[in-house]
Image 1 (cartoon, one colour):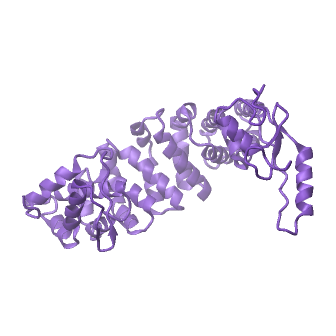
Image 2 (cartoon, helix red, strand yellow; image 1 turned 180 degrees about the vertical axis):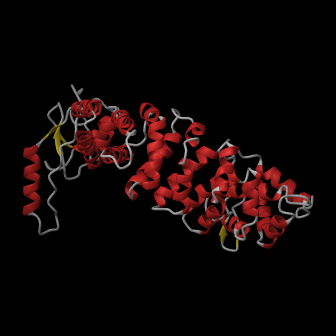
Length: 416
């Protein structure tokens, strides 16, 4: 009974003693404290501080008991690693800052690697680093060494700092402002193009977080020479699914509300690549590809490229009910943009409308309109799972149900 945590009632793997003298498993008591509790769960006394002291004696007794009872299937608990403290993090950050000011790349690389490894040991360590301004220091170090060439010794510290930043995401405002500097962005482009697989993935993740943060303007970042091209290349020739997804999200941030950047992305040949991505079964990837495609269809060149691809209509029709509610909204929006000006004198001279009819897209739209107009259970058609579009429209969406009804009526598909 003495080996069980008073909170979880499970065998303690990392016993620690609170200021009230009661021993708990570290994960359980830390969760208790994170919820805002300030009293001891057992004694109900106010805890003088949140310091938790490892109880090595109890841990050793528990380990010996596990060894003695190995035959019933009980495994010996491993010796836990001591978590990092806030004061230790502060000391490490001071030392990294001092080494950065001296231009001591070797020492910086050593310390940053230590930060990365400690952060990966446990979620508690990661939170401790993140809450003590580590990202700001790492970003400052990256920015300071970003001026060197890719062949210089600074390349190693840059990749190390980038990996540590990717481990401690999100960036935070201070780190975003540092990584968003012209020198840092230029360095990120270089790593995206020429770095190792791991470095390119980390660069893609950091760029995505940079664009998502409020401290950086997407239009300014999109203007960085070679950045859009490097991200598009990661989508066209993915090094990993995670890198491709991060690149798609980054591209979406840059082209949203920026038709000029969207036209650049179309010129890079991304529309057929996105359609090929949609052929795959991975739902998260399909959602991101549809979001980017939907924005690209907002410009004439994007619609022209999509209309000329043989798989556009079949894939959009197939994905309408097979991915998610968000994907359904995006597919309807894409169909609307392709078909609304496709009559006589339009961009596709009726081709998109004919293909949409041939692949059954309008029948599915009618079914979607019917589902959206009543609260009855969703019907099934051709083994597709029909999910009604959500009431709240996605970003930049018009009232799709109304618009599609108008298109169907105008083309004689729907009679009112």
